[in-house]
Length: 102
Image (cartoon, rainbow, N blue to C red; front, side):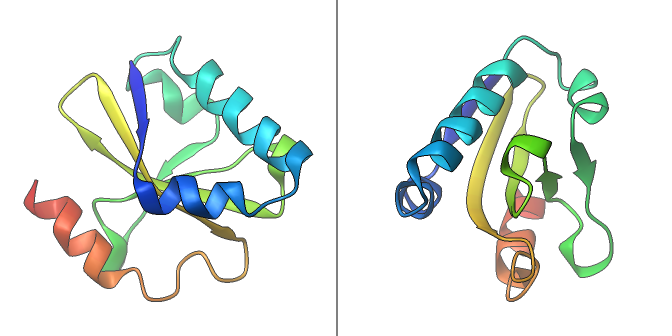
């Protein structure tokens, strides 16, 4: 499986402290060895309700942040944003609608 970052996600990650940035990039690199089905055993979870179509990624190495992404086909995960845990689900309705369309 391949992971890609949007410009928004890359910009948000670049604003974080260096150890957190490294932890996120290491986590994304480790995800690439798994299939789409296996990522759910490694911190991924489908979101529900008005955020249906998005996937949340979390890991102990960056515990105060969450990555939000979506699937494209069977082999690509696109990371859309990286936000602090308390704000990650706010104002993501539009992002979820666009993810469901693709």
